[in-house]
Length: 66
Image (cartoon, rainbow, N blue to C red):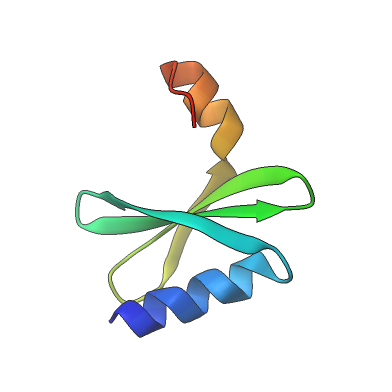
């Protein structure tokens, strides 16, 4: 199943790079650096994309620093 998630994240990156993976409950999030922005792509265990969001904005709201 990892390979399916990895392939889905690579497709979303489209020339960007995957910075890290995070486990969020039963789902996973790939943090992608693309065109100077960090994008979080949440997907299920099978690699189906569930949502995308601006990762920098999320961490600013929670006070995290990466």
